[in-house]
Amino acid sequence: MAQVLEFKLPDLGEGLTEAEIVRWLVAVGDVVAIDQPVVEVETAKAMVEVPCPYGGVVTARFGEEGTELPVGAPLLTVAVGAMEPSGAPAATDAPATRSSATGDATADATESSGNVLVGYGTGAPAARRRRIRPAAPAAAVSAPAPAPLVVPPAAPVQAPVLAPGHGAQGGPVAVISPLVRKLAREHGLDLRRLTGSGPDGLILRADVEQAVRATAAPVTPQATPAAAAGGAQGERVPLRGVRGAVADKLSRSRREIPDATCWVDADATELMAARAAMNASGGPKISLIALLARICTAALARYPELNSTVDLDAREIVRLSEVHLGFAAQTERGLVVPVVKDAHSRSAESLTAEFVRLTEAARQGSLTPAELTGGTFTLNNYGVFGVDGSTPIINHPEAAMLGVGRIVPKPWVHQGELAVRQVVQLSLTFDHRVCDGGTAGGFLRYVADCVEHPSVLLRTL
Image 1: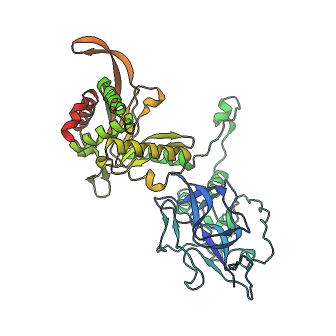
Image 2: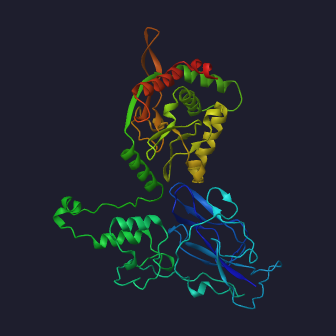
């Protein structure tokens, strides 16, 4: 007997509450195996493939490509037991019951790998919060027929409308995302009067935002920017996905962190010569950013105040014993900050290999949430853009960021004479709550000394 099980968008972890469907990897009627990837989604942190914990025949998909779904929204339904080992459809004597991937299925009804956490693989089912979901359409409840299944035409999307009295009978409000509820509270919007445009009437963030705009007071043409610009209408780009996540994080950093920046020019001629000598001796090539990372970890060992975070609730500075080094990477999807874990215990060769691996994954959009979080200090090489200096915004909740400009030939006084040397500008932006200028200046001066005289590093090896 076949049983139709519903697989919902799993808890993505790391504070992620929604994802956008990029590409479906299966169609209705396809046979899927346990833990087979069924859909590719894009979160605010990465693009990942979501595996389904059930094996069987796909009977329905929820959401078209480009649709943004909250965690807990249905992704697809799978008829478990619909295929015999020979590949023929199984006989169905009675209507199948419908279960959920969030724990409604009984242990003896189906075999499952457990719930899926994006970026971390599969594991045993974890305890979950109860989520309110409207009743599913009857068409999705019945067992699949032996005949081939086809994708039903997509229903037109209904715009959110305010309907007085909707939900007044005490029925559940079709909202899953806590962010949507918070947004509605901030604007005094009654969710029971809102009709959602998501699957099964689910209320999405876009529905709340549209309702807020609809209930806002009208603005006179004389007061609009478009009128002031001669009636020209500008392009509107949604702040979502990676761009939205970056905007939220940088805004929070500016609100919470009293940052300051100091900088210094350094003669990198000897560092460049040392790297050339390393790469001429055979073996894997050593990258410049790996050498700078090695210098950073040595400097953080001397000035641990900068490898810390601030606990506002406890009013404490938490100094961290391990260095997880983030580095800024520009991709087609926007700016991401992959993290090299345990950078303090890695050699220059190991650091080079990890930078290469994470950079390639960033370009392909395949970084996992685990590879994008947990950083304690960030190295920002903006010299690749052909600029000398910058005052970067700290990657919250870290306490500091080292910026490296381009290395270019410049006039420089070397051993009492004017010479052409390879010069780089180094800048340190730091959280003034964790240390004062003396500590920040000492850190930056040590980094500059190592750049100018790489032999200084030998003392810490």
